[in-house]
Structures are given as structure tokens and as C-alpha cells.
Image 1 (cartoon, rainbow, N blue to C red):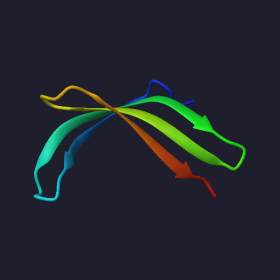
Image 2 (image 1 turned 30 degrees about the vertical axis):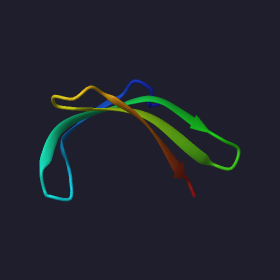
Image 3 (image 1 turned 135 degrees about the horizontal axis):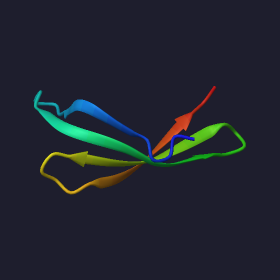
Length: 60
């Protein structure tokens, strides 16, 4: 289980090429019977409050 894992990344970029220091926290993972996985992430950019993000992943 990946819940609670953290992954500091060098930065998250935008289309203008700017980089922002960020931390990504995996809060929860869910898998359904068809092999689809949903990750619930908390992304914290430097100087901004954290955001919650849901990401759907197809595992084949």
C-alpha cells in the first residue's frame, strides 16, 4: 500500500518553463474489479496551500 508515502520532486513546471518546488503525498489508493486504480494525491507547491487531486490509472 502506498498510502502516506511522500515523493519530493525537483519541481512542477508550467507551459512557460517556470519550475515550482513541490511535494506530492499519496493519501489513498483504490482499485476496482477491472484493474483501474485511483490515486488520491495532495500536491503542495511552495507558497501555496495544498490541493487534493484524484488521478485515475488503467493497469494492463
